[in-house]
Amino acid sequence: MYEQFGMDMLAIYGMIGGLVSTAMMTLAEIPLWRKWRLYGVFEWHENQVITRKLFSISSDENETIHIKGIFFFHFLNGTLVGIAFQFIITSLFPSFINHIVSLLLIGILYGFIVWIVTLMPIHKPITGLSPWNHPLGRWPAVTSLGGHIIYGFILGLTIFALFNNF
Image: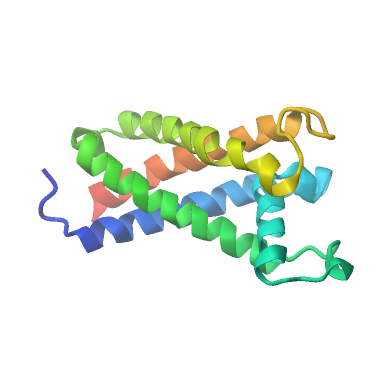
């Protein structure tokens, strides 16, 4: 159905969608970071730990927040997930491309699935903190889900706009 778009253009649309969605998700998470600091934003906490391990940061610097590393991995993950979404939609649900409501709903579902499949199983092994028995209660898990719902909604909206305006 979308043969006029090459694989490279589909990847670019997915990349743009992933970047825009991650930016909006990040903006929504900033107030939560201000309230709960690093431990209250699951993705950022995971990226902090990954950054420290990858770059062999000493225990003396354990408390230093590595914003560049956090955002690099946050946007890298969001971009890759956006590219995957684009290929899933055009392969499995090509008729959704022209229907904004369908894309928004599948985007929201996709955000939920990404949260369940990629974030929830890895949070405790990476950070040592259980998402469901978190020291800050259950609100960080709920707000993390909300961030992924925002991500999926914006991703669906962005993909719709790209396909139907360019």
